[in-house]
Image 1 (cartoon, helix red, strand yellow):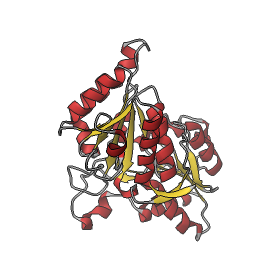
Image 2 (cartoon, one colour; image 1 turned 90 degrees about the horizontal axis):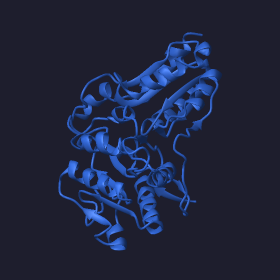
Image 3 (tube, rainbow, N blue to C red; image 1 turned 45 degrees about the vertical axis):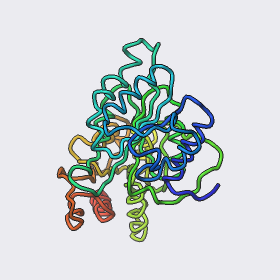
Image 4 (cartoon, rainbow, N blue to C red; image 1 turned 135 degrees about the horizontal axis):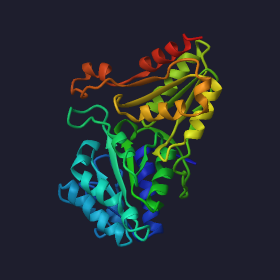
Length: 325
């Protein structure tokens, strides 16, 4: 185990999979000579050459369209879309072509591609949207959101090897965090949640950059004698419903944390999964969601706190559900 940054772990996953499987190639804007805006593809051009590390024109629909065609013909492309908002330009290729390939061809054809994109969290109103819930609604797509370097590497390798299209969502706030990462290639199974922290009083489900926020809140609440169990689902599709249900059956309380807009966010799906399960009978308080209240994220940093959930918001929500006894 060595200590790597999140972006370095992703780069190592790409390099090892490209060494292992000559069908894997990467493409996107500024990924070759520049090494990617966040240095995730740094050094790959020198190692694999321009036929497998491809700088593309600024055309998200063209980039993903090319990748879908290559995947249907047996290649395993990994696309980089520089940030989440730009993925809207390639929705037809993702939602109608890649996601439906297996169904339309009765399983005879698959589209094994990975679309890497990133949430900026704090940018401008045009570059701060968190749209993961859109893709969880589409049959045929898998949605992955790693929260630390170890998972970033293992989940990316799993996504590349998966036979179906995967939307792999990173977060700008995580690229420079450090963590222990195995040197050899390894996989983290899709659909298997983890427990960064165990507790008996409240279950907090969070993903991506919000896992660290939830853990920080749990540390503060421990001083008040409140035991918070933090669950990181790692993947939204497939979703580890069983792990969440088991935790709520133990704690009787649930808080869900995500940076995306509350209305129609994936947190509603998590809440529904719990209320439709045996955990409903164990709930001692209403389920709380901590999320963007439904506004564009402004450019001004002074205006971020009302739009983006933070540690204080999680602490407040946990105290609220604890007040029910």
